[in-house]
Image (cartoon, one colour):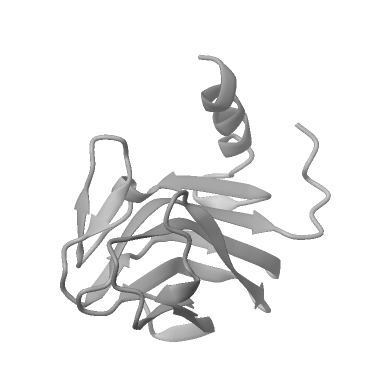
Length: 156
């Protein structure tokens, strides 16, 4: 195991069970979806219908400040419409943070990081990051990352 895979493996070892200590990275194809088609490279593209292109990873987060990011790019020429990125817990019953993303702001040549900051006041369970895509907006999602900000656990 070398390069990026080794680094990802080391960082994933920082997790205790499914509890994120500092960093988590998940390929798009490993996340559940209601409106996406997995690709051989681990990414996911929209299927042309409105819905969640991703949700998950249903992880536990201790109280603290976090940033979640999705590496995403717009495909095709339709640049109207608004995507919605949110962070929820308890299987969507508790909204932690939410933001709108105009499709026109997404890059087309490379996947850019679209991020959302959030705070967990009390330990949270089954936390998921979701991306809702409207009809006819075509995007490619590469991966999800979750960082714990101000963490003292960054030493490997």
